[in-house]
Image 1 (cartoon, helix red, strand yellow):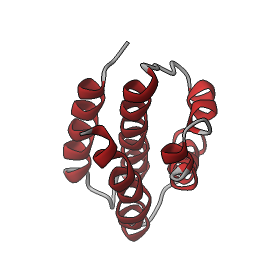
Image 2 (spheres, one colour):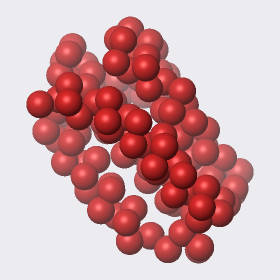
Image 3 (cartoon, helix red, strand yellow):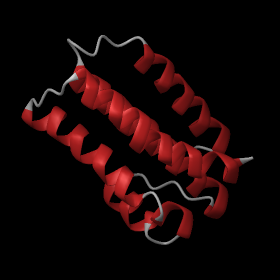
Image 4 (cartoon, one colour):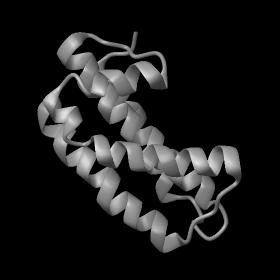
Length: 119
């Protein structure tokens, strides 16, 4: 089971990787990295409040609905998950602008909501 600090370290690691991705070439990987960064912020919160380690996307989705802070970011989380799924399973590509907007809106909303609760 991962703890809060492990999830935060992975989120930071993912963000560092994201910052070096060429969005013109690897937008599919970029949105996937954004999604997994968000996942680690959510998992850090779940680890803190309930010592929970979801283990699967379905379990995590269910747990997100259990807590008010994660419910408040569900729309953004689901959006990142959807973009990532499209990239991973259907070969979707996105414009660099779309990827940057996902980073600045969806991921930033999740970070802004989760980080203060993890201190």
